[in-house]
Structures are given as structure tokens and as C-alpha cells.
Length: 173
Image 1 (tube, helix red, strand yellow):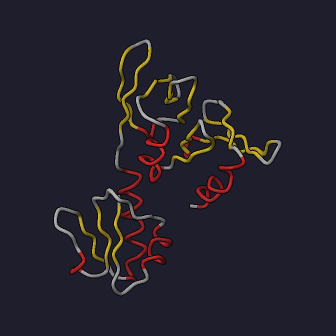
Image 2: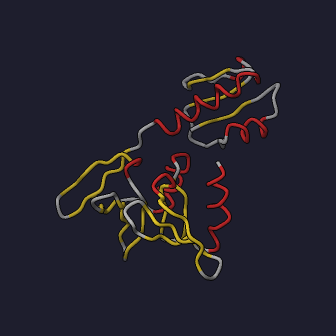
């Protein structure tokens, strides 16, 4: 979504302060020098003292931008905004998008959704699941250094040990 190009500011510090990472496929260029803008991209040129306003703008771009996923169930095909999805889980050979009232089978690989939704508040919790952190009701410790997430629909999703560190880091953002 973003490419950060800095001439006068420390690029790593800017990324940390704005809670963003550069991506291979991007449409926004954040820079402190107008000469580093790119044709065909939306360029945001700013100075360090505008960092707070830029942070708000980026939050709006990342959280406000709609991403739709199409899935199907016994009722037919449906297109849903990912902000309405509680979590994605692999059941058998199918990947399910779980909403408050229904489940849809989606035609993605879990790693594809993880990459697509990493800036949208979704985090990997196991080999089989990605959750929308805004749809977590409670977080409870479980045995064997694991965590259980109670989603707003009362479903329980487990955070496996190998995903625990990245899950905790994502909650700090």
C-alpha cells in the first residue's frame, strides 16, 4: 500500500512512528522531498513536524479503505466488506470467512488473505486461522503458552505458540 522514501528524515523511524511497512505493490508514496515523488502514484510530501497529522491520514487510508471479499454458501454468492468479517479459518479443504450471522467459503489461500489484510487489523493466529483484532471480545490465557480469543460471536480461536509473539506485537499498534 505504501512506499516510504526519505531524503532528510530517517526512513526506519518514520515507518515506526507511522506504524507502516513498505510494500512491493503500492499506490501511496510518503516522502519528505518532492523530487522523490513518482508518476502514477499518489505522493504525500510532508515535514517532520506534520507527523501527527500524517499518522491520522494514514490511519484513515488504511482503516477506511474498503476491501471486499466474495464468498459463497448454500444461499448463493455474497460480496462482503472485510471489516464485517470476524475471522478466516480453514475447515477441511475450504477456507471460511466467518461473519456474525453466517459463514462463507472463499476462494483464496490463507497466506494470500494474510498479505492482503495485514494493514486492515487482521493477524495470523495459527496455520489455520486469521482473526480481525477489532472483533475480539476477550483474550484469555490457555495451557501450553497459548492464548484463547473469544470473538464477538462467542466463538473461541486459539493463538498458537509460534504466532504468539507477532499477535502480542500487533495488539500494541
